[in-house]
Length: 266
Image (cartoon, rainbow, N blue to C red; front, top):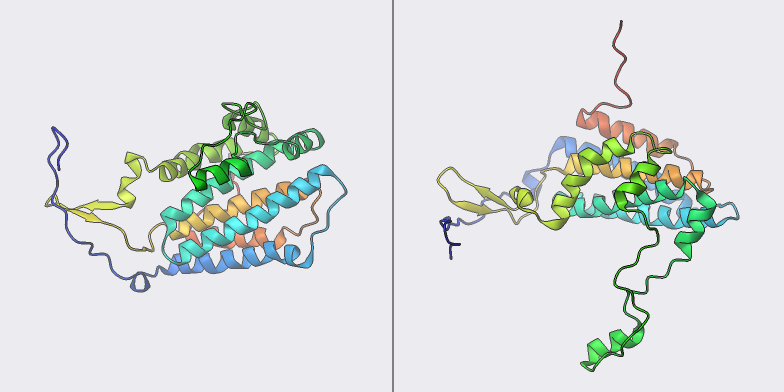
């Protein structure tokens, strides 16, 4: 079927090769370094976290566990050749990075506010039972149309977080729009899913691929390190050295600059 004014292209069968024959040495090296960083992140969780006795440290521990889980999931997907799908999880990691960065600008007050927030828009047990049973759900008068734990938008939180995470806004400006594009499946992200050949035929890209594995993993390690740094600032006892080393090695493997650019001699 063709939309009016648009000619329907010829569809060809997928020609992608098996993921094992596509393995990218750079992607493999980056994955190996990232796994070392993940192990370092998981080590204190397995041992038992040490925290200061405060609301902000407890909140930090929650974000650290979520960070470790998301990083593990990103590496699992990337290792299997599903980098574009991993980028949806990476977007969540970047959003957590902003949230915990913002909370660390006023730890005691904002941590308590986050921990005490109850999302009244979520369905309760009675509503779920009704939906599964096919009966009429009870009406809830307390459900708001929209509710957030903070009145600030994502961008406003990022602006404030930039004060404790220098360079955050600049980083988001490059990375976040791309990740959002992937998550929402916008038109500009369609190159991940189809390849239009010179003869006009369209090839569906439905098999795993080594494409974008390395850059996805690099950004996931950066998001994890930034989040872990903020959890440490909130009172979680954590050695960031191994994760910092993993970030440096993943960037080097990708040929990306590590640290600030060298100063230009006068």
